[in-house]
Amino acid sequence: MYDAIVIGARCAGAATAMLLARQGHNVLLVDRAAVGSEIPHGHFIHRGGPQRLQKWGLWDKVVATGAPPVHKVNMVIGGAPLATDDLYLGGIPFGLAPRRAAIDRVLAEAAVAAGVELRDRFLVETILRDGERVTGIRGRDLATGETESFRATIVIGADGRNSRLAQAVEAPVYEAVPSVSCYYFSYWRGIPFDRLEMHIGMDQVIFAFPTNDDQLALFIAWPIEKFPEVRQDIEGHFMAALAQAPELATQVAAGERVERFYGTADLPNFFRKPFGPGWALVGDAGHHKDPFMALGMGDALRDAELVAVAV
Image 1 (cartoon, rainbow, N blue to C red):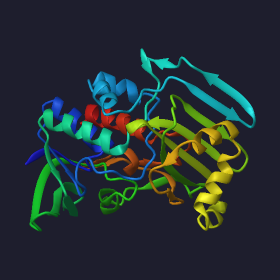
Image 2: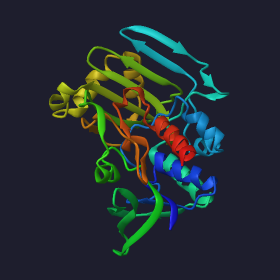
Image 3: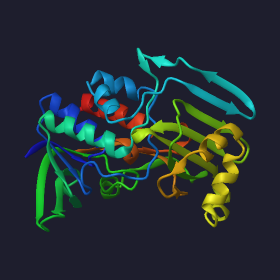
């Protein structure tokens, strides 16, 4: 019997498990993927995220993965520039953009160091209940095929927008808005880059920032209506959109793309009621939104802190 079971060992889940364990709780953390595996996902962290990492003693560890802190911002909105070279909050740079494999591993290792029992490659198949109250999980070890059940005082879903826990408890959805944008992104090397750069136009938004391995991450968004057209020639539309930022396009042309293009139009916006008898939701499981403002990871860390206090 655990005090808490957390489903999902990435940003929201690993941080939640770590904070609960630091408070003395007996915590089981499970994830169907291997810890430290990569996922195609936005990964710029700001608005409180860096400050929480510092408070938890993890800022230096995340930076040490090779994710450069960002304190320079260059924005162009409708042709009007806005820039700063000195944006710090709480004494540290306002943002950074570690690849998901890097930051997820740091958080999972911190959770284990705090006393969390980690079971990765464990697929949750059933949410256990006693009447209306959630009491545990049943799932399968993907390495051995063995089915196991675990019980806890509370089960916390940090398992993304398609949360199995949220579906099992039929967590009410509100303020729902369908996808408004589609995104494609990839990574380049050989481009010195030390800032967050955004170009906001009528038909596209361009985001560029440095990440691990001295690479440049480049994201472009279009209105959802353009998705069928864009997906027919991803690279062509990507480079045509990039041409709307000529200086950035020149830099990118001097580098080398090192990964394929990733993209999606499946970006619904919604809130779910995030708690009930024996359960709670954190991160995208409780609130998913268009990545335009890059709030997902910072919000995940905030949610972890809030639920750890509440529990």
